Length: 123
Image 1 (cartoon, rainbow, N blue to C red):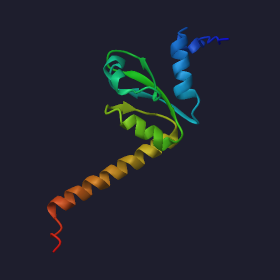
Image 2: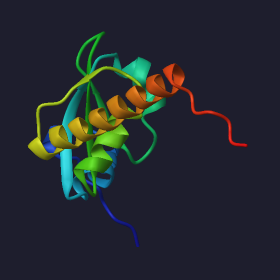
Image 3: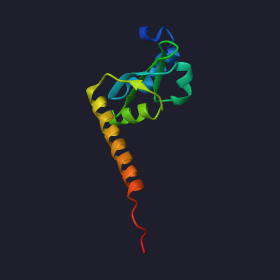
Image 4: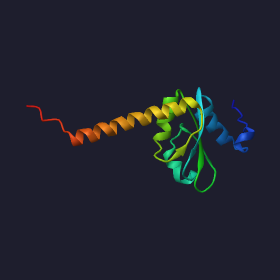
């Protein structure tokens, strides 16, 4: 006994793409589409199985369809790709990215402060 997977119209008729997108994106409560500033070919090795599906736009951009259990998880996955990106929604993801940004800003400020004013060695 087997099963049949029919491609959804949005997948261009490709059953593998449809199944991959369904398993890595649609099943999560938080979903987004992010524009990555790099080609799909260039970034494909950075998108591990399960994170999402890349969709080529042109030679300099691609879309990443992804899902996660929280906006914080989405922010982590996007920033882990080590590339520039544009995100427009959901608003909770933008808030999560602001939180990550603020944590990084504080960490950098603390590192600079520690460099300028090192703690004396413990006796």
